[in-house]
Image 1 (cartoon, rainbow, N blue to C red):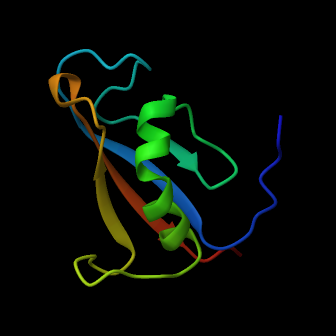
Image 2 (tube, one colour):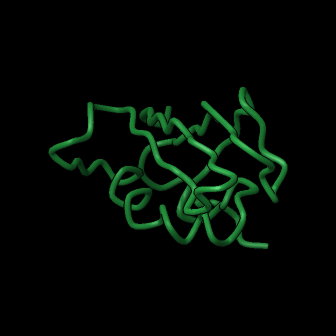
Length: 92
């Protein structure tokens, strides 16, 4: 398994909301690390869907509709929708 080399910001994901039944078992309140090297236990569909935003976010980029060091991303499965809050912090 690939090791996260610790590049860019440290990103923490928190499950804000989980509607229906997440196939990866995520529930509201779950918290885990995520990066371009570590999917954090997300299913492939969700990870693939958010990877471009995660890559930009982890390496310090911003998009006009993002609010600083916190963004929200959603699973592409609308019937079993999981919403994550991603927060980035400088590595120490």
